[in-house]
Image (cartoon, rainbow, N blue to C red; front, side, top):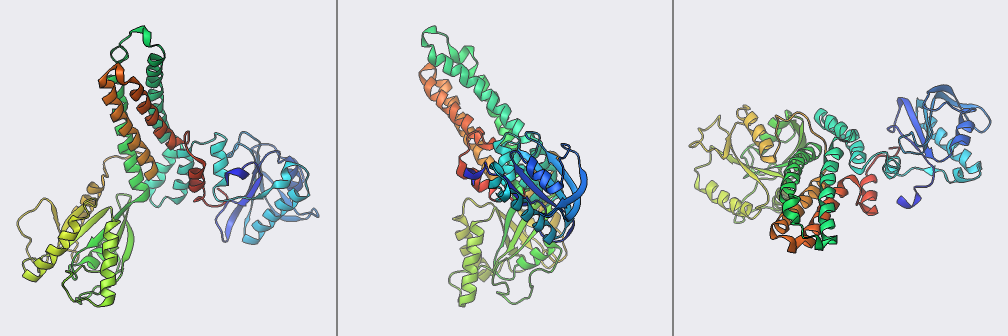
Length: 465
């Protein structure tokens, strides 16, 4: 995709289907001839003009508003023409076809006009310096936001809040790198660099700020991507009832017959604006139990889902908790769960409306999926386990790749501090770790981003954006 970014492009910029208004967007160099052919006249920059959009015979295809943004004062940094027409699919396609027809008859650069690829307008905005990569990703995040909080935080990222935090860290690293490099270039000065330049103090302050940005990015990624929660436990412990209670709807079939749930049932809910993707799975049994083939497949899928979870809710039935058969099966399940050390688990004691809970246990949530008792405590515990802080009102949206880049930068800073403590003999290693930390930060805003990653990021955008 990146090799064709010099071609002018055209696309419908509004969602498919019928609507009151539809927009056709064109971006490229020197679009003046296209403007005159479609609008019958030149347009005043950045002013909406009501006029007919003309076909090859000078007859109107539709009448609407035309806006012309000459480079570099446009979304993409190129000339941009927007035609705001009536939102019928046929009308918009006629306008796109007319743009391509004008270009085919033209001489010069406009002749290469072609339909835009997904995300190509925003790609050009990034490459032309109108947005950095974090801001460009925030465009898609704002469009895809599923909650009010996600939309607000994406808007902050689009406005540059996240980028400014990253840039401040990068600037501090550049200043420190310059001092280290200067010391390496002039070794005969006999200046105790580490002491006079307060390298350890500078590194500590940079690391403290980095940890703050990393914590904010984790929250932003959590708000964007949500928490993947899996309900696990033996048959008839109330997994399906809990899913229905959390979702506020009868999504899963609930019966007293063991094995009713044979495959995953999933639903996305919101807790304080955070998307929580809850999956109900087939009841887990001991390997020694006799299973039919369908139930065996369902249980293996349950374990696969558990392995991908961010949080596993391990449900227990208070009415059967003391039964020997129940305890035997639970021991086998817990043994396998212990092998999944990377997956946080939360013990949930269900059916407190039918049986009294055991002695208080701060590591378990007692509830009734039937009456709703304890559900609020479960919701709060889920967010706390995932690292969400409901008291923080403002923030910026982030992605998993941003979190990973910040973690790599933090790891390089840890190594840099170790080399700084070693003295002047480790200055070259210190310089290298600072360079790698700086490069990791640059991956967030696009300063050190390979083309294949750009293609993957922008390829997920909608066409016309």
